[in-house]
Image (cartoon, rainbow, N blue to C red; front, side, top):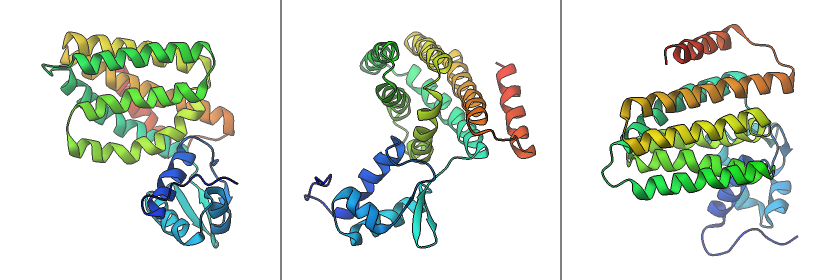
Length: 242
């Protein structure tokens, strides 16, 4: 097996970055159990840096220790709901900040290009490209706000979101709606309409969360708990207040 590691920086960091990428892109499946040896063979390196990388990923919640091995994080319905609620707050704030930037042409041009590429990817049923573009769109808005602490809060949420997106964006309706909502949000950013921008971003994220939960419930045959129902009621309240 050809090694995926370039021996130019600490191996455990390369292992960490590669494993994180494989988890978020679905190459390592939710719930999949792996030993140090299997991960080492997967990456083509020794077990020592793999163990260190696994410890970091366990601290981040993407891997879980499981009787001497590790298992890949499996999102629960409660996780999905909480992540989307938090993202709605962070991204609506970031989008409204970007909307009032004086020199935002570079940002809006990039967002417009991402939307065009997303339409093309959707028409070709290229789910991998569509997922990457969707993530790029949201990350560009977050980090264009130039608020470091906001970005630090967002990063772990975004990592888990990548797993959720791989499930929901394969459905024709959600991906079409997602692109349309991106277009609407971009228009408000271009106009500098802060209030509409904030509302559009919040509505987009919360609506996406509700769709994600509906898809997940149907796919996994899960039941909605009382705690989750409370969060869903909160999401409905926010959407109805738009």
